[in-house]
Image (cartoon, rainbow, N blue to C red; front, side, top):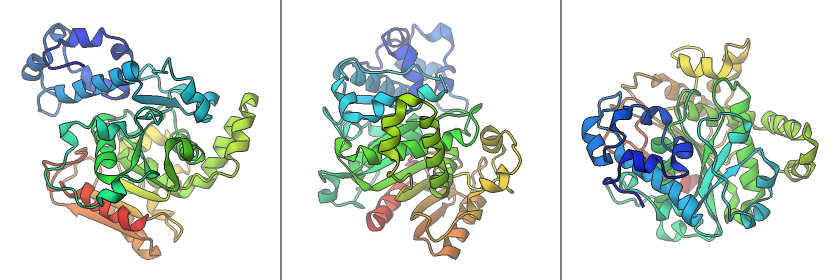
Length: 393
């Protein structure tokens, strides 16, 4: 396993790090290290290079992601599941053929690069919990979920959708760390979704999430999860992805089936998914994009819709909440300078009107993109969410 005493050059030249690290550690973060520093150790780079927002280079995060990739290759502890490929939708067959694991090149951004990253159920079904880094451990005892429910033979599932304005995916702080927290402290089986982003416009990202829900529900036995307890958890634009899929699920399912129908070799998948619902059982949202009408995040709107006529209202979540909407947890920070807190407030008002079970919280400070937010006023949000879902499921 790599350590901070290894040079960035050595790590990057170890297969499959160079090709695949962007699947877990955003490529735009790595690009902030000038090439001339690549022969320095991570410990040195941490002192020499700063991220755009002022903190030292995230060497711990990079190291963790690199080691997760090595766990995938050397021990097959994790697996990448390519959702739109036929073989991955027959999980038992796919797992038995996993001696040569599929590792996608990062930043491809097409249908073939849509995947779920999760613990290999044959080797370590809760690999996120068993390889959790220190950064995901809360600065308080996590008591929301009993030890008995943390160790169920069939766990609830959580599909995590990182944010990034439908332009990039923040797959570490809004993916890996959330997966570690949910598996270790919540008793979930976690999946991180790599969905399509711009120039793949609506409905493609939402179709990817709908397919992920259907895939996990259809293969619940292999993943050792409860098919009636599937949560979708998204941050920022990933929050919009989750919140919109939760009311569009029927039409998205039909689009997914139509896409498979257009490829004759996928007839077996069509038959498998006909009776499988794409509706999530619960929704969790971190500082989410909700509205495209006012006080909205322009980048997310443009990257998702390409300003196509009619989508501004069609994808403003607060207009489409009904009594059938899944129980929802959401939080945001009042000083959020990227996605205004009014988005979460509008969501709460819509949920109030329709009597949907929900908990929507706002915290004084923390701005945007904080992930678990343990150093911010919102440090308790994930504990509150776990307690909320404990009662809602």
